[in-house]
Image (tube, rainbow, N blue to C red; front, top):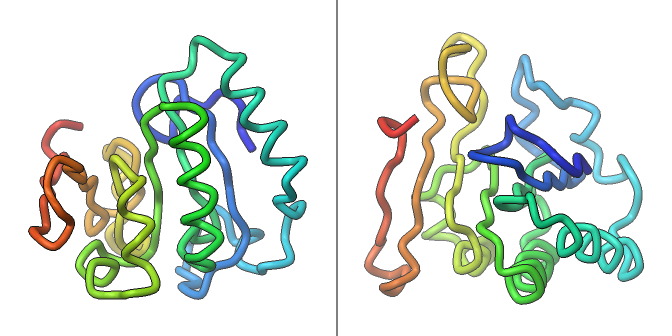
Length: 164
């Protein structure tokens, strides 16, 4: 957890890094998080403490969930995101090595999209590394705004890449 981050999305964000990743991207900035056993377990007590910290910091602009790959355990991710949304009301960004197209087609992964405002999608590709990009590491990764005003079945997505 980074309680105040300015590199994981716009403004001041509370960043939660989840363990577990199947992508194993060469050059990954956080290979320690690939193992599902990394870090500390996200127990009810830990989550309640995080929510209390978030609610107690009026300077926060949003929450970012990263990893690892948060979609490693999609059921746990949905529970986490739903609670963060319900109890904080802040915008939620989420990083994943999957593409939004894959997530929309996956019955296991799709429900998490209901709680995400911006998805940073795609695996890190070392040959496409571009340090000039905001909030992502390689040119194949996209900032995907998810419009919650219409059903996900209509793929209400817009790409924010040009905004940053």
